[in-house]
Length: 106
Image: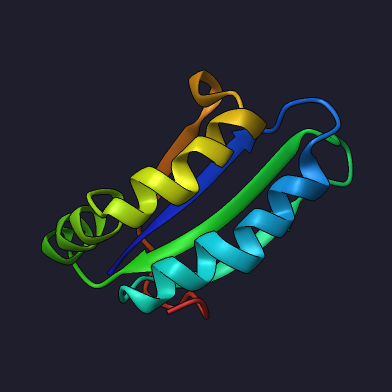
């Protein structure tokens, strides 16, 4: 099992719009393709920070789901243009995590 903790810097004044895009389009679309989303968060200290966590059973599953999601026409034509308007892509931070043996998140 592997996890991704993804942190984004959202453009000034766009966090509400970005959260709406995540909750109404991105997360449902990714879930429909088979991804497991464990959580979606905003920062109390920074109005421009958005964080979310995804879980994959294996590296092979992660690669397949990435292709299914990010290689799709829907992602390229309908979602990606809006993401680019709302966030600084250069600031994306992705940490790959492994849960400890007794971690409740498993």
